[in-house]
Length: 151
Image 1 (cartoon, rainbow, N blue to C red):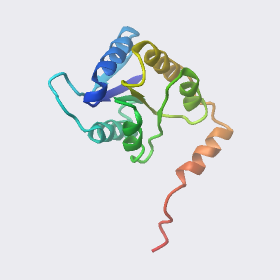
Image 2 (cartoon, one colour; image 1 turned 90 degrees about the vertical axis):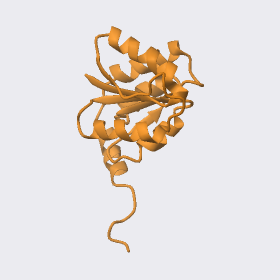
Image 3 (cartoon, rainbow, N blue to C red; image 1 turned 135 degrees about the vertical axis):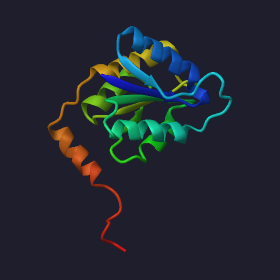
Image 4 (cartoon, one colour; image 1 turned 180 degrees about the vertical axis):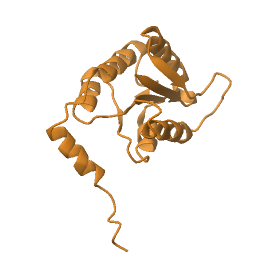
């Protein structure tokens, strides 16, 4: 499994802890930033770069971290083909994968401690998509949006 990970300045410490955990598990992880030398970073920039890499098939899934996880999720979901979710417990994380086939997990450093965040990440990565009726619903979601034929 190939994973991408990134954060803004508000999620840098939690991102580091998660990245270390993933590497210790032997997973392939590419860190898109931010580094320690960055005082301020805009989360939409990192969300877009990572989301586009996931949609392009360069990575199987991604983890994005900011202060709450919410801004990263909003920005990532602007990229067609991304299903980014902010999870605050393991149940949400498992359901996001099993029922929604989420491909990006967003987390908040100001919301979660590293122990819980790592448990959420593990649940996300270990849970397969169930397909079936859930795929039917994802197909409906993919069709949402403005009618391209209306002026």
